[in-house]
Length: 487
Image: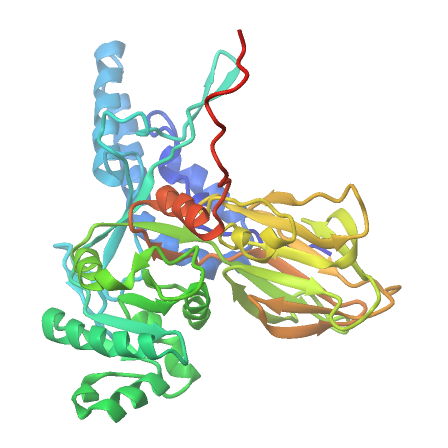
């Protein structure tokens, strides 16, 4: 039975990479959309809505070009072709920008009127922003387009783009949520200081967790302006109110922040107050300088993909009767728990059999989680913006079982066979453990809602700095210059 749920992410939306001249762009995208699974519609609508305006422009452009061609059939082919190509390029640039990528607006509440002004809705006041490609000047070698060309039967492709994603505020942020590492005196002191500064200097509305608000009010009644939430229903609506998330702690605090948002996630600014942080590039001592720059924008961000997991029990009547979805930023782990027997797991990729895992377990990791449990189990370190899923065995009873990196669009199914000697246990970012009995299956695919984390420099520099500082990657003494030499 086909349990595949194709991954949806910003990487899959390559709308503007299709050459617009002489090509019916609207019909191509419409065909692609209708062939997609209907269950993707709700997940994709947030990313697709900003491009509907582009679609209508392209459709209208094709209609006008067709009319102009019919009216000018006898007025010279070369001149007509040049005019049409020129008009196509101009409209493409107006619609999608000079860099050839459509700037998507995400996490925006309210509508726009005919004058393109933000009209806030009655529920919340949200800052709008745009995501776009950034590179070091138009003359940089990094200024590339991902275009596949077909010339004279030869398939060629331009160099893959290495541009940095940039976020630019279109309206001033109004609301910030601060999430802190628990049971830390230094974090509690910094949180109180930051709340006061953001309120007095930046005039922002501030949300904190209920227990943090209680601690602040115990310290002083000055913090009465701080907001919090009462139940899970209010937590589910936080993304409609909050413009920016600030975390004070380590990677665990970032994971906790991501777990609070079951759908879209506001931009996250992670400050390093933990023991080891691969996702926390900002130092707390300079928080005023960093936050001032981020609130003004633009800022470089890293889109950290998440996995979307469902548990399907053996007694389920169909593939839609599931437990979940459960979103993970680092990894989902299937292990043998307290059993002394080997874990026996059958693994499928888009319904194609992959392998049978016999060992302590299996890790399905995002690229952001490649420096966590997967790394300890022998997996590779992968740049967080590489869209993929890491398939890493835990202590396999096989010398040839090497880790894999699979493309982001696949759906993985891990099932406990009926001949297994014991149950398996699944944990999601290290918590929420679930028992998997014989016949139960875990289905994982890429979630449509990434976690956008702010960069101190850029995505690549922050990643390399984290593995140098956190892991002392490839640190050794330099070979002495004196000694035997080639003659």
